[in-house]
Length: 165
Length: 117
Image (cartoon, rainbow over the protein chains, first blue to last red):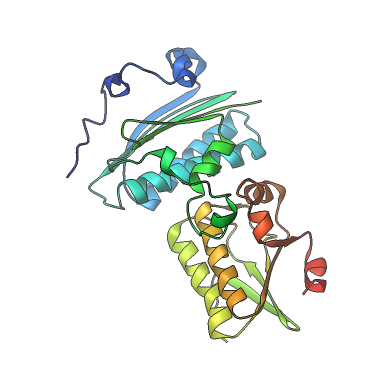
């Protein structure tokens, strides 16, 4: 059962009018050197293709290798969350990705059709008694390598930004 | 000796030194296969002491970390030792962020790691 709304051209009412603070400069269209909005099927290959393109674009806009590493890892983890945990590899379900890149900033929004989750309920993977649990580290890596990570809707949409130092 | 397609295994005394064929340890199918090959070394071939050399690895995801944790448990249950070496700084940061540098014995180079078994 999908409650997913029309994936493209939808107004921002799903945010209930409350744009994340970090996303405000989005209106400054001229600042972005590359933007894309894609609807991809829930497969690892499609996710990889999109991610490879984003990484290539970062390189073209003079992002350094170390910075790209962290962004790459954060987007990889977010895409796996959407494709695997959100949409369960169901190719009939889509992942919607909006990405914008400038020489000093990256914005990415990734939305799946899953039931979402409450990030406040994700336990801290660095607790002593959780150190040997083999899963649950993606969110922490995303938060560490990005400047901001926010979840929208029912938790099925993640908005991340990276601002270069 | 089993066929290790994603690993290169080199016996050095009582220690099996493992290198990875992949520069990026990322997608699930790949990680599953690497995991199976590592588990086969420990459980199938009785290699209790493993040294994983990450010298050619440029990237790994949280799913790969999960496999390493499971491998560590299997090795400990057999009374063996797992050590990691030649991890590049950006990947080492991933271990630090997740505090897995406290779980794993991480050494700067292979000679140092071998001497510590």
